[in-house]
Amino acid sequence: MERREEILNAAEAAFIRYGIYKTTLEDIARECGISKTALYYYFKSKNDLISSMLSHKLQSMQEKVRNAVAEGSTVRDRLRNFILQKIENIMDNKPFWNLFNNEELPLRGREFIAIKRQNILDFDFSTVEKILKEGITVGVIRVRPLHSLILMILGVTYGCVYGKLFENTNWDIYEMIEDSLNVIFKAIEVKQEN
Image 1 (spheres, rainbow, N blue to C red):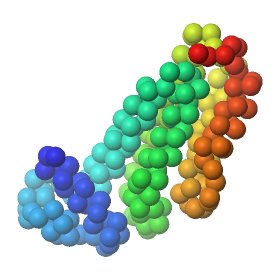
Image 2 (cartoon, one colour; image 1 turned 30 degrees about the vertical axis):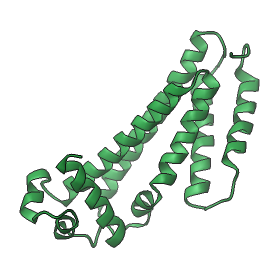
Image 3 (cartoon, rainbow, N blue to C red; image 1 turned 180 degrees about the vertical axis):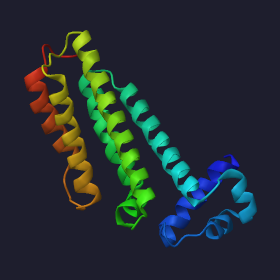
Image 4 (tube, rainbow, N blue to C red; image 1 turned 30 degrees about the horizontal axis):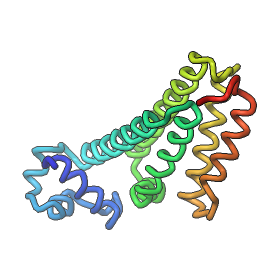
């Protein structure tokens, strides 16, 4: 692991332990065993570090989603893998996400989080759109209008995430996803996929 990534991991641990507002660059430097001066070599400020940490986390999570989707052999498998990986990403990083939901961030921080949320939405929308368009191209599904279906699938995904992350529900996620996919595919499937 390279030094920059070590610092980002140490920053995440410090932020989770003390909160974003209370954590200082000294805390982060101490957490990863370097001087504050050395920390400035990699990051210009605490905001720069937070921005880099979020970007790094999102890139890692998006790569996991891409890999999970690629493992699916059918449109249905790829959609299931997308939803499950999104939920797994959130649950595996629950303290990290709770940090940003519970923390009183300054305006600049809130604006940055809003941009990152939009990036997540854009990635999710385009990923589901690509899966569905592939299904249309090979003739296994028919969809009109496409954007409404994408929003339905994202609604299922985010509903499951919200229930698990914020409401701590005991939902059977696999059953919910299968039930939702059954309803969706009943309406859009032209022929059974192999």
